[in-house]
Length: 168
Image (cartoon, rainbow, N blue to C red; front, side, top):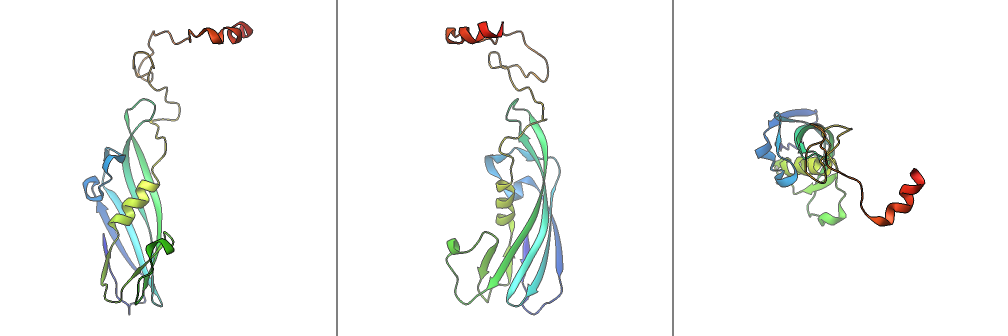
């Protein structure tokens, strides 16, 4: 997902890409996409800066954190960066996450890594297949969304006996 940079251009230029899971390399964070991902980026030159805005759609398949079944999680992201042409680069830790610098001779930028980073930062912390997922039985491992099991789940710990008597 590369953008060509032309310093003299003033009009807004839009570019579109679609990408497969293997092209963006999200590693162990998820299992696959259920369709191709899409990116739209607009480039506008403002002085020596390039304002890059757009959106990405990543059709993720994530493992439910309760029942471990794969489930669809469509992720839509707003993207925004400021790219500055400079004679000498500033250390990266002094720049905000939305801005970066390039040298005057740079003619194109590859945004694949930045889009990958945006997807990873926006992954749900605890993905669920559905809001009311019942998860797995802690005793036998049965998926409780599929069918209930007959395992005894009461605590046999005698320290809870006082509270049990209060509930009766």
